[in-house]
Image 1: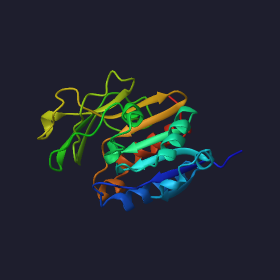
Image 2: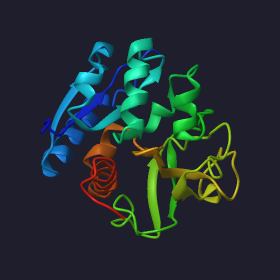
Image 3: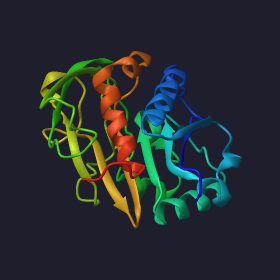
Image 4: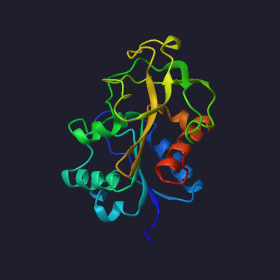
Length: 223
């Protein structure tokens, strides 16, 4: 049996978040709590069929810009379609801007954000491991990401939304998705727009959100 592990990918070709080291360390801890071994890398050469076969999940942690080679793209797409798990966090919505498969996988793309400020996350459902620990209305401070389009209708299941009335600068209106999941062929995909600041990765509620997402994409928890 292949070793089940988590590949945390942190390469950036655009803006680089200061929170990446803290976030990677937190994700490694969450992986360990799920019985998984984590590796953090910025090397695109690891994206091969042989390496990805060992992965229970691949995490893109605030990756920006073109971060995969052409062979890496092919290996990653085959991995997801064959049943791999993929967790995309925060600025990962701004990765691989010229790769249609990646945009289709997420269901939308990053389209700017207002200043960091407090607001409220509205949880639509608690029957997913990522949202089970969250309150119905979760007071949170972050960069409230806007997107080029609402991903609803692209095959994703929206789990949590931003209440735009609680902060300045939202552009999607009353239905502003922030966290969602989908199945892509046999693979599991999860995106959360939250996670800008290093402090977020020490917050127990946010860690519970990430832990549930990671366990779900890795097949450790089902709906």
